Image 1: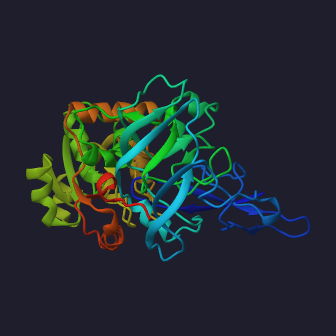
Image 2 (image 1 turned 60 degrees about the vertical axis):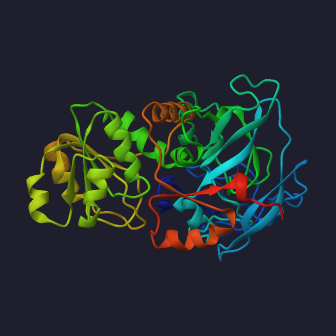
Image 3 (image 1 turned 120 degrees about the horizontal axis):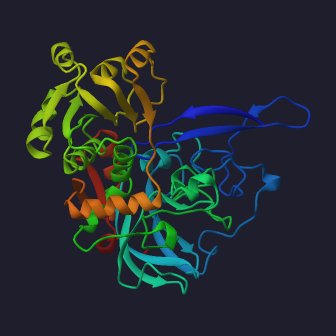
Length: 420
């Protein structure tokens, strides 16, 4: 089996898709990524454990979405590449011994939802019911569940399953498990599709559910389950939380604004790096950044050379790395959490001469996600949001294309999702 790589940026949930090439018995390999609705589970080789869909003679025949499971459910889903969402009836599995059932109250909209709805990366299978920034209240727990009880506030983020046995899982890094199961547009252990949080309820294994402290607002806390952990994890892993350090944050969007908040809560000196001078007041006066750097201003960039211990780069567009590397001190770290579609040029000389590191990070494991939520509650960190009704979601997607949101849409599921 040959491999072909495709880089994707989904603004907070960053994937390196490994597209498999199926080898026939008498021909050379041809790249294949099947698009049928019912791919068989666990026959894939993807770093974020999506799936490589198998030929029809090997696919499992399943029932309709409404008949797959005993619990009737409803939400909004897209049926084709137009990405237009509309009411959708489906079903959830019965609550098992190790499961937790949530009545969904709020669900954030991530940029990855938009790309998946439109099948812009060729791995969507329809219907697509998005949402991986889910918060709600526990309505049922299995007899082996120990961490949750009925009435608890809880959240579900980007993943709902993993193998639980590989080295990554044993190190509490389920996000790097080769068999990790995303919350939607994937295949669960039982061979049925996963559906996300644009819906009334969800059943998830206890291990992949996090507690929401009572003092953390559910609506503004929901985006932390994706955007929050995406920036928190590299800050912790790469040792960028010491108060003596100077951190650069590239980009002031859904990820960047949360990165500033977490870094300031750790006591780090923060400089926002942006191409837009108009964002300076927002960054410094409202979000609390210590300084602001216009990356298109040569004089500002020259004055800041060699001043930063680390940089969190949240930008998804193609951009030069050389100027950012110049901002780092010797031994500094440039951490990519955005993944531009086009390859970036990486100059070797500044890396070698300054022992600088360019690296990446993808969300976080369950233990770290709970740690992040607890830290956010303690330090009053939330995302800046615009709460919308369910029937506004298609307009919200149109605005998201134009970056017309500051900084995250959150759907009020409990009060506005009506049964079809």
